[in-house]
Length: 472
Image (cartoon, rainbow, N blue to C red; front, side):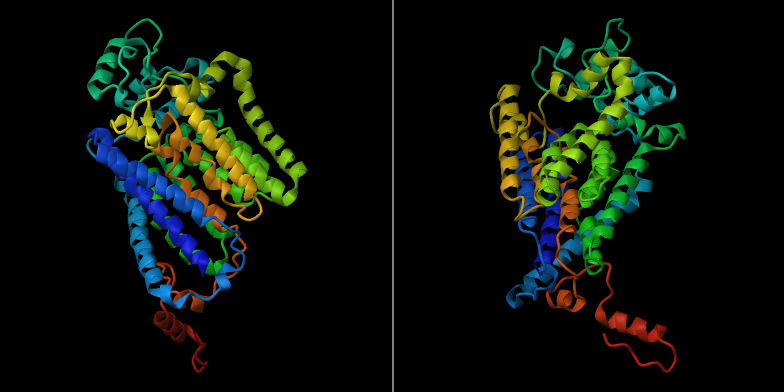
């Protein structure tokens, strides 16, 4: 029954990420060395748990009998999973009622700038060349607390992240200035599909957060479709129990726009069209690029390098075709936008190792040092995925973003979707069909399967008159 243990591990990792995210938000508001350590350890432990949950190929695990001495512990773990599933479900149910006195659908500059870029596109203008953060935010009715400040101009004198009052002061002084803005990120910082895909939604005047929430729901449905039928109730409970998925999507995240095609491409990577979907993910957000080598290794292991290279070429073609109009229109503006996360002088920020620096636990090093550590971690993860390509073919989907834990900017949004990717990897494993009796004997509990007495009662109620009761 190790497959059920894997599900528990992924779910508890998602639960830990949920609480780490909550503490991360509190520590950003009120710096605390102890809180920072809790966040970094929580995220690191969650990633480690996700990696461990995908070690091995899982062959036939659904048919193995439970170990009797672990049944009680297993039942307790599943009760915790069910409790967290209620937390995740409550986040989804609360989504339509999340408005407050200061509520805005533009939770961060990724959502806000993408919507303004989509509006410019609908007006027949080039977002990479014409987007202006001041005009955009004035139209949306939001302020500088939802911007990405840059270490230049009036912010060049201070190495610390500006306070809200400093942001407001600079915003007020520069928003009416004649010179070009250099204090706030003002470019679309992602590939073209980040705003092209949402343009029809924006044209209809709908809240893009609803679209991102629907993308999460669609990704969950795809995971369930790939899972063996007997395992689906447990997978669904786990998807909800990994509360970071629902809570931080409802809280505002455009990352689901790349996550949905990425999940589909990983789930059915043996299909001819998976390379096209992976290309859509890469043409939506740069973080999908980190998955590229691991995706190709997984394909090459099963189908050979010829197929892997063909799918890589298809993904590159999708990226090129969707971005080419903007490259032709203004190559400098497009390149400046897509490379902004690396090239622009941003302040250190995040929930990884850098969070310890921001809370005075560790000293601050120069940005190139973090880049070097991140690159070294990527090489190590790639080597690990290569060595385990036959024994653990699914582990790469988690290893792909582990290097970002060491980055100069390691935002929490880089990690909260990891349980979704891990579930997509798990349901690909050849675990076999789960027998309900074995699941019950192992102590597993789910919100989406009736207990045995209720199942018998339902069968008696729906059986034709005079028919014998079905065996349970």
